[in-house]
Amino acid sequence: MFDFSDEQIKRYSRHIILSEVGGTGQTKLLQSKVLLLGAGGLGSPAAFYLAAAGVGTIGLIDDDEVDLSNLQRQILHSTADVGRPKVDSATETLKGVNPDIDVVTYQTRLTSENAMEIIDGYDVIVDGCDNLPTRYLLNDASVFAGKPVVHGSIFQFEGQVTVFDPRHGPCYRCLYPEPPPPDMVPSCQEAGVIGVLPGIIGSLQAVEAIKVVLGIGEPLVGKLLLYNALNQDFRKLTLHKDATCPVCSENPSVTELIDYEAFCAVQW
Amino acid sequence: MAQVRIPTPLRRLTKGEAEVSVDGDTVAAIIDGLEADYPGLKERICDDQGEVRRFVNIYVNDEDVRFLDGTETKTGPDDIMSIIPAIAGG
Ligand SMILES: [Zn+2]
Image (cartoon, rainbow over the protein chains, first blue to last red):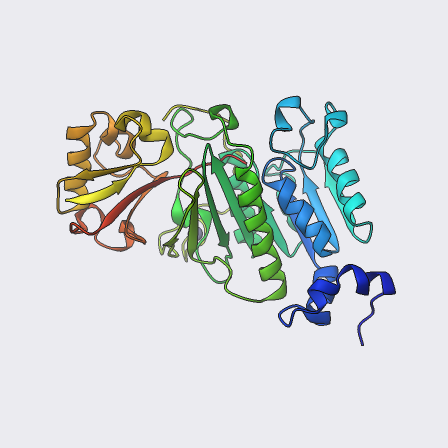
């Protein structure tokens, strides 16, 4: 009844034996398409586990090249990859883990010009990008397209995870309606980050993406999971859909995609 | 009085403290109490009009105060107020 090869039955046996996954769930995973925004700190573990899980199509969007300073946390890439496009290095690693999947790469930034076209065709988007303008752009595009986004972000020793599913719950602008002025947000890795933190947060994103694809459990829709590595504290906050949200409310003020100015401020 | 959780980027203003105890029985009073104890905190949390900045959210326990009574939300001694800024790193 399932169209698995002998090799697939063996490769995915520990999934298939789970009642929550089974042959049906594994088939869903193999037929699913997940787009990863960023092949860096968060994208590395997320892509690794999604590839291993047999997510049939993994899209990777990243315009960057591998830098030696990435290797402290971006485990998709190795020392020999320094200078290579991240999407190339990542594809090689993911195909090595699981040749059963397709990897589609976009060596570009997400922009108002390409966003709708790129996200079209994917079932779930994993947001592991490293800047706020792209996070707002992705949010608005995913609201317009009605696609769930598994959001993860990190700063030093702390991380945040949630699922923005515009069909059922709040979006990023319901939390934070507008980006901050360029000089006022703690955003980038120049502020430092403990290397294993994206490993934890990116792995949580992979779990959420798989749950959304399979339709199992309770994805973090309307919940913001906060993690603090220093005291190993996990907390969940409640998020609400904002009736005055600029993009997902009845009368939105944002009706087309916006390219916000790129910025990176360490001080707040 | 309430316990206030300070986000990492603002701990330089609280001498590294992650959680501080502050007088006040509403969110607004606690923000003023924070400013009194740790000068400079309020301007990070609020804009010139005294409104909470749009890239910062304040929670009492696990609820966003925008969906309670805003900065007039009452707080008791057992409540925990959290300041949660947008973070972008990946
Ligand atoms: Zn919204």
